Length: 305
Length: 262
Image 1: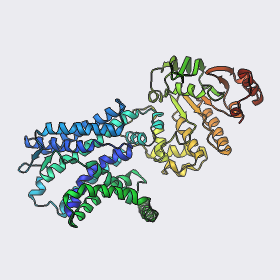
Image 2 (image 1 turned 30 degrees about the horizontal axis):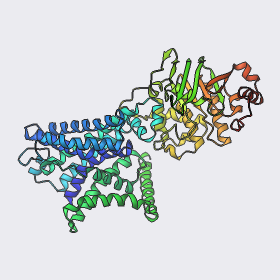
Image 3 (image 1 turned 135 degrees about the vertical axis):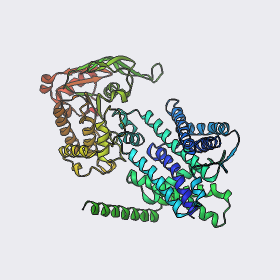
Image 4 (image 1 turned 30 degrees about the vertical axis):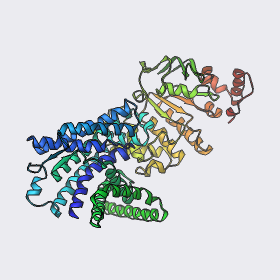
């Protein structure tokens, strides 16, 4: 169970990336399946070749940003439909990832990685490591929420919300999309790099279905917490990511086969999309949101008073 | 301030659907001039506004703003000089962002946007003052999403957002047409107040004769892509709605289009 929570917190980095494109830019970006593996392969190859793990992980982030930039250029300059642009980059990245790794799987078993200190201290899967990953996830969450409240972040949000309006105030919406896609895929690749180090290998197939996991986290989290503000919506994504991993863990424990995971993912996303439309559920969701809003308001009043 | 010279625009040129929207239109606006534009549907009024704003690039002619040739600049590059309010109240604001965030984005018109916090305490105070002047009760709702506002409130907010960074040109595209008469009257009044306060050079398209006569200090009438009547402040003050209709009949030479009788 702890392992599932821990994984959920690491994958939250990827889910936050998906949130940036899917919710902020209103762009369903399928690059994710490729850029996740790109991050993992860059980090793995870097570490195997003696690079400090932090540097290799940083390089993975840059590589992911490059991948996002390519999708963005295809979409804005090439005027290719967003979905198609993402798919094209994703499929191209499959070959590029194989080139980076040189083979389909790069093991990291005896290498020093960012996770090694945790493993050596035998902390993986304990409350301590959950705490460490929670702090890391919250730091990234905080950075994203802060960014979305800066002048630049506001322009990016408006690009997804009303592009004509923000153009009329002098913002180049193409640049905003490029920036958003780069940031998003940078986070996705960072997550890929972390997962490779966590599980001890990078594999060419590890990104398959990643976009669905990301969307599931965004949708599940926001179905529960709502998205009445950026802070709530982004926090919901982290919660969604943890819930998603826990549900999968429970499903596997209930006797489902690991090969069923993709099916479970798809069913979860469908449920999270369809259930909130049912009236009974919507009423319950509304009740929970109102209660949370009331709670946060009291907290605010107390703080001010 | 605004110089439109010999601008022509044909949509779908060289096809069966070719439609001439502007034919060699020239229009010069002095600083502080407030021009209302009337004309039947398809006269080229909106195209003229779009060509000035840069959302449509004309086939021929030049546009200058404050002495600068902007003909080849795209819409977002011109936006630093041009404030705009659209007909659709939803068009001028971002619905899923708060009132203060919308205002903060508008305040940065044409600036380089960086990593400073968009809404600061000082800005919030300024927004509150500006919103109070609108008398829409929005000054207490800074944190509310714009999608929660009524059409009239949204249009009042759009008007404030388009103008309070004091652009060189203000373009109003039938910005009261989608509102009920009461709200339309309110937005019309606000328009007059705000344009007066900032001394904005304004180009306003309208279908409403009374509004065209009441607002502004110059009036032009367009027909089939040309300016067919140009009244200065004095001639405009003597003109009546009836007189304008007569002018319409003259240029059309046939029965009046119902769409003009609003």
